[in-house]
Length: 409
Ligand code: CTP
Figure (tube, rainbow, N blue to C red):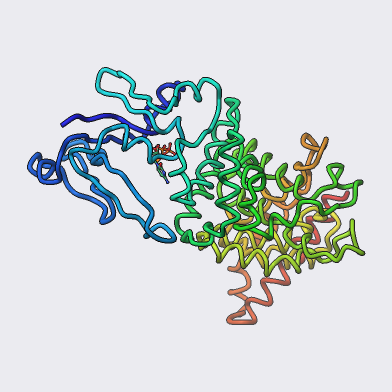
């Protein structure tokens, strides 16, 4: 049997990028031989094994054929006579279809190295279309390697467009899609992921609510970039520049969905878009079964981002309601993420990327002022149950009034 490193490990070594995952392909072996050598079988779908000592993945060379819709619809053929070249041709991109042996001798039948040098993401063969998830994967690789100058080959974008138009993306499971989306959002240029999905028509299929933002104008005084879709891309870009976590980036992507529902005669204003957007945010959250913290933050940012922008003008009672809505006393981190997302929204505007955002510290201060109100004296006065809650609210309101007065003095 012959063993080769394959896929991302070869690609990233040639790019000079640190490698984390090592995948290997085994040519000329049977399942029985692998088991006899102590390899542990994993995965019901494919003949993949874990090395008894290192735990790394070894897959038998295989060919694949699509036999139905969705990811389940695959038949594969793994046997000792499947060649390395046959295994490589079923893979997604030429830069992912290279293999190397222990001496780093490269097997590159589909010219991955040439495409690496030319900074091109190109599909290997028409077999690309057998797994629609690859549309998201290519967009994710485009986001990851954008800073190195990579772009998607026109013929690959065309294939992605055909796949998107065929409706095949609808067959992807929420789990597989979310894995790609979440990985793409934490790349350095997540906006490229969305842009590439849009360029091939996949965004309309996956997140029509986000796609609908392109072409929707906003008032130029607040939004010199005007277009809501472009604004959303800039907000995402800022979220990566500022190293925001996934929760914040997800909220950034969805914060303005309501603007896609504004009747044209109201353009460029978007009255109450914070509220109209909530059902769309909920729908996208649920479509991809986003984790609870992502879902929650996206809804809260959608609902309250304009509160944050107007923080310095808010009455003490409104400030208090805002803090209560976030349960800021028990969930300080979530409030911090909310402020982060709103700051990205403020900076994700053409020419305003460097602006100051005093609202952030102002709200942090307000949260602190409310948080330090002590419960003990109220308990000592005999308050309990709902009355204690009311008394606490009154004290916090007092504290916020004092905070406001001091801040405006
Ligand atoms: N692959 C594929 N089609 C998919 C998933 C994977 O062709 N839908 C192939 C590619 O050759 C890829 C390899 O399997 O390089 C390993 O997949 P994976 O570990 O998901 O990706 P990597 O390329 O290693 O990239 P990453 O750095 O994102 O893990």
